[in-house]
Length: 240
Image 1 (cartoon, one colour):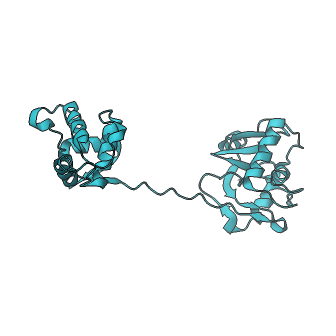
Image 2: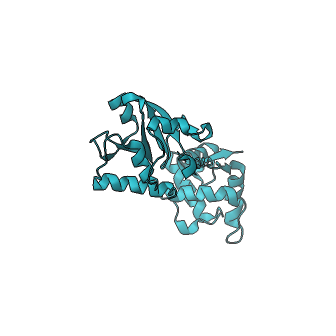
C-alpha cells in the first residue's frame, strides 16, 4: 500500500468521523496511518513515530496544513498523541470526544483537555513505507498599488472633450478615475473607456459637488483634494 494524497487522507478522516467508525482506544497512530492509506503505521506509539521523523520533515511553528501529522508529547506512559490535520486549525483526533471514535476538533483542544504538549506538525513520514511532503502554501503577492497622475487627469480633462471621440490623453490614470466614478453611481459603465470626455467631466463635477464644492470649484477638472478622496474610497493613490 502507498500513501494517498493529502486531500484523500482528509477525506478518509472525515469519513471515519461522519460514519462513527469504531477503533480500539489509544490507536491514534494506527488510525492516522489508515487515513493515509496504509495498513499500519510501523511505530509502537505516537511518540516513537514523532522521534523517527527526520528533522527536515518537522515543523514546529505555523498552522498545520491539511494532511499534516500533528504531534503531542505526554499522556499515558509517555506514548504521546498524533492526529491528522484537516486544515484551518482543526484535526481529526481519536478518543478526544468519545473513546474509540474520530472527531473533528480544534488542535488546541488536545492540550486544554488532556494537558499534552503540542510539538508541531510534520509531513506524512512513514519510514520505509514512504513520505508525503506537504508543500508550504505559496504566499500571495501583495496587490500592485494603482497610481493616478493628477497632472495626467487634469491634462486629459482639458484636452479629451475637445479632441475626436475616444481620444485618450492619460489612459492609465483616467481608467481608475472613471471606474471610481461608476462605483459612486455618477458615471454610466458604457462611458468607461480611458478618455476623460464630456460625460466623465460631468460625472467628476458631480463628485466635486458631492464633496461640497460649487461654482468654479465644481467644474469637472480634478483637483488634488477631490481626487485623493476618490482614491481613498476606491483603491488608488494620487501622484503628481
